Image: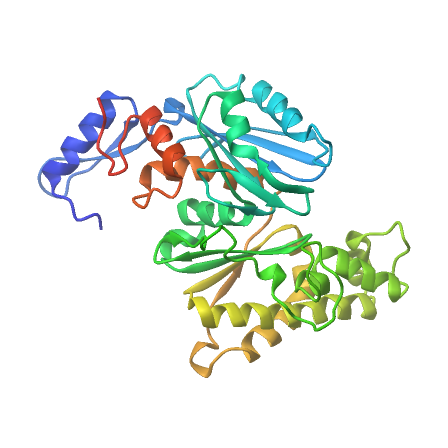
Amino acid sequence: MINLSPATVTQVTKSRRKRNLIEELQSVPSAGGRPARLIGLVRAAGVAIGVKVAAKLVEVVSVGIDGTTLTAHSYPYDAADQDALEQLAVLLENAIAQPAAQILGVGIGVAGSVNSQDSGIVDAPTLGWSDARLGPFLRERLQVPVIVENDVNALAVAERLYGTGQTYSSFLTITIGRGIGCGMIVNGELQRGAFGGAGEIGHLPTMIDGPLCDCGAQGCLETIVGQKALESQARELGLIDETGGLDAVLRLAQEGSVQAEQLFRSAGVVLGRAIAAVVHIIDPEIVVLLGEGIAAWEFWQPGFEKGFRSGQWATRKTLPYVVEPWDDDKWALGAAALVLAAPFDANNTAGGQGRLVRERLGTTVSGEVTA
């Protein structure tokens, strides 16, 4: 329910139609009174560009304002190069020249800490970036709004707009892959913390004097159940050699290897316990699991179920979780959602960049049409 009178709805939709933001889709037979009319967003009214920056790859998608993916491309990249930001700028200059519709903005998702979506200052150990001025650099080069965010936070925003989170106001988005990530939506709002580091559960201290993590601490959750950690454990067990990866361990599990199955099951227990701890802090309605590691979920799940349920209060043991199918484009789609969410964000999380997106779309933060 939107709690608006018919007259208000008519006024608002009329102004949107004048600006070609919405269109009438079809009429619905009347049950008494005037026939109802279905309306929808005009896909070509604007385009959001979503970018996922990884150590060796950049994924770029263009998305219409109705959430439909228009184009998707992947490009080789080396984040460790001293001119990495310049390479990224050139790549995106070419990418944003393609969409015919007006570009509302560019959303960037990175595996690291982002001071604020507006500032775009990034600390990303996995990319070799410290205090990288990603946002300011790209805005100057691209001359469009650029919103930068942690990649898992961006996925949580996408879940809120298009996924499971549409029907829940508080939920966790957990990613399993190279590391372990967490995006937190509480009462409909993304939780970023004071410096953008909220939700970094991959760095929960899990083992005293444990393996050294990329973040500089010891015994982080990722050093036990992250991709590198599981591959290292598999080599110690003799399941794979130095050239093998986690995909090879998965194949062994699928072929019936008891050791490979146990590797994933044990990791599942640790992950389940860690997420149970976060549940006690955030008190979500549901947990959403996704990411590259979901390919092995049938082997993670028995251990996860045990660890997750045993770590819950008796009253929360039935807390639901869902496992969503994974496609690598989702990272970039999450980044595009940062742009598409800006016009509806009453808290103005994206700051000045969000305001610029709204100006390009022709709406204020409250949704009123500007001149």
